[in-house]
Image (cartoon, rainbow, N blue to C red):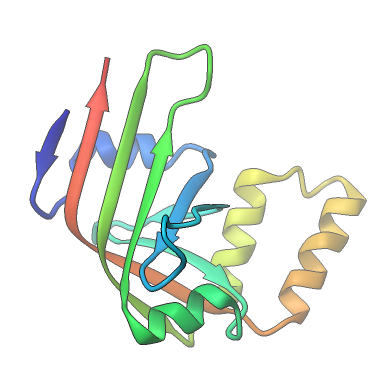
Length: 142
């Protein structure tokens, strides 16, 4: 395992641009943490962003304690690899719908009418953007 105190490498960003699920954990929850699978995007600035409902439990917890982490792993059949990003998280009121549309195109076939309808439903609801600002990045490649 390799830990870099605060930044994502070019190889990390390449890995994170794949349509993989991340497992998000936020502070302030039950012990042990209860990770949830999420769609995410690694930005050119080296942050990780995702979207959620503004009244979700994760947002309420992040408003009390802004620490969060996300773990992303390669799928079965590939060489073992995972990446963990932990840090302070901000709740941003703007950009969530644009992010949602980009991620839906990455994870779903939007030519499928049922998926297009699913996306329309998500876009019709209020959303906020969560941004994880890396403080600890850990990675493992076998």
